[in-house]
Length: 182
Image (cartoon, rainbow, N blue to C red):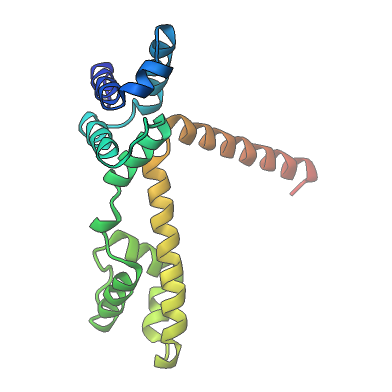
């Protein structure tokens, strides 16, 4: 995870790459406080990934990045859509696995989508139903890819807060059921 030393090095790269911004907006205690905030927001990102995100930003942007932009860029590098099948390719893969009776397929996302849709139902369906299966599969695959991307890019503090809130809601719902005698 990003050490203070790494964030400091990234900070130096950014202030050197964007000297006008640094001179105008990052002077004295403001620079220290801003760097501390960046450290807090970026601390869960691996060192090499944070450095790569910084270099990538500098290479393609003329403006000093917000911490959220570096976080987003690191997430995009970590969870590259180039490393996974497109929805259409995934559909072809699932269809090929069904034809060869290969379950599970070996691809976690394809298996999750087909599991949710019903692998056996798909295998037993009529050929005329293929377009509706394809549409449902592609929609489900896109939703899972988006969900996985959000998990990969969300700050752990936000994830923890979301989990705690969900548990609280669950507890609240359970209490209501008990009060109603359900």
